[in-house]
Image 1: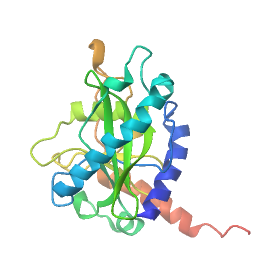
Image 2 (image 1 turned 90 degrees about the vertical axis):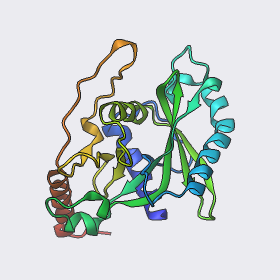
Image 3 (image 1 turned 30 degrees about the vertical axis):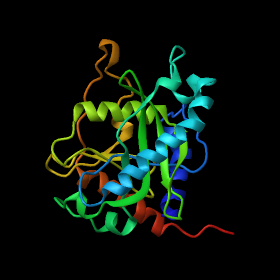
Image 4 (image 1 turned 60 degrees about the vertical axis):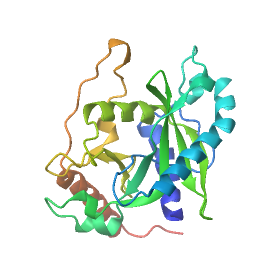
Length: 240
């Protein structure tokens, strides 16, 4: 779990440059996203994550009220009235599974829960920010981060274009050593794994409709990650 938290911190730093997460003011450890409606998530954990998010609003909302645009809100928003959405679990694919992936393999066989979550923060039904919840290592869920407005907006687009169907909702994923975040839509075949870099930030509110992108085949995305892994393994060691 701690390795995943470290990787998420690294991805957040890189993501700030690559995904222009300019509105993200990160406080503490970095965090998580999309809930998977299967045996990975038990009801007691989900309720605990929700309560941790509610508790964290007492800390984060007052901070955001005085710095609205920094956290992703609009100048006219009343942050105290913001609602919390459904928690979204962050998954990861480790290097071994990324290397061993083969065409047509279902991604749910290699996705592992990270112990981190994102909770969308909404004003009038529109995502403004993400509130992070993590396992503190002592069996308790706690709020950790607030911001990541670009991720919040991109994720709302994903949910509108590929809404949950039954037990199959879009899932947010990291795949070290690849930078940034990916997502998959399990109900759509063949297996897909798409970078969030390919998702427009523009929303659907106020009559705006962003162009829906295509899903990337998991085989193609993971082949690029395998190539990156192989390049790292073959690179000469750096001098101390």
